[in-house]
Image 1: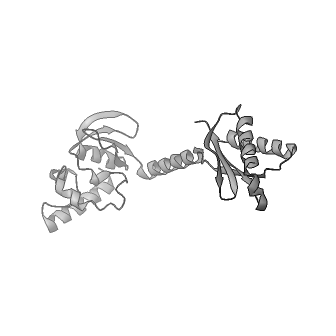
Image 2: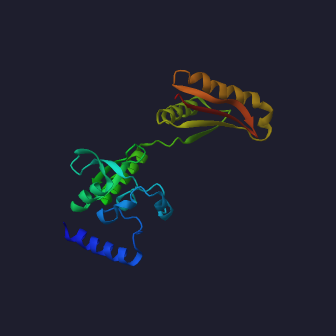
Image 3: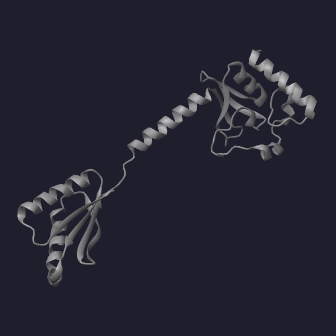
Length: 217
């Protein structure tokens, strides 16, 4: 028996002397009658209910135990599994609490939590945030500028982003909005070779004609 556990036993004996046979959240040999006691649920003061259920918070009478070396010990009493974890100076953590009986593993919880957070951050970095890139033009655009816009759109689409094409109309140009629509439709026709979909067909928004395209999913 480790010194740490001997000290723990002495503390538990003092608790028993003070409060009788009703210590809270205690599942060792001296008080294993509390394992599975649903009354203990009222004493679960975890601020984050998504945090791991571990050590004395485990209420199941039995667990399917995996030790720190990955060896499966099968189903055993929670008190025995907790004793094994304490002997190894590690934690007993439920890794599958919904199974019957729940699956518990002996591990270093601090290291386990750090690795989980690290994996979550790496997964978040790999997630691509879809942006809407805006291309603004006038309907009186020359051929060179038009080709530059086409190349920009191709780049944005290849990056997985959406594109909003805005054909701006100023003053009396509103009288020639049909020319702005013709230019927007020209973009649609010239991008037929790209893996894109037209999310919103050319439409008049205020004083502008807009067109929304996106990568094919």
